[in-house]
Length: 79
Image (cartoon, rainbow, N blue to C red; front, side, top):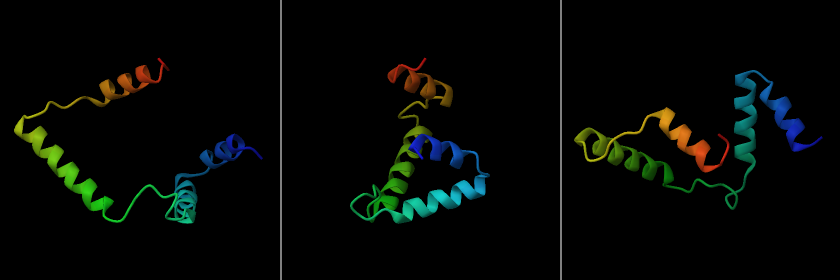
C-alpha cells in the first residue's frame, strides 16, 4: 500500500478515529524527529500573547483568513 492510498483511507475515517491515529503517529516519533521541543508550548503561548497585544494596541494590522490563504496559494503557485 502506498502512502497516498493509506492517507486516502485514513482521511475517509470519522474525525474521532483520524484523531486517534494522528495521536498514535505523533507519539511514535522519537525526540530526534519531533519538532516540538520542551518549553516550545510556553514560547508559543508567549508569542501569541505578544502578537495579540500588538493587534490590540494597533501596532500591526491583522490580515483576513481569505487574504492569508490567497497569498499562500499564490506563493506555492496553486491558484
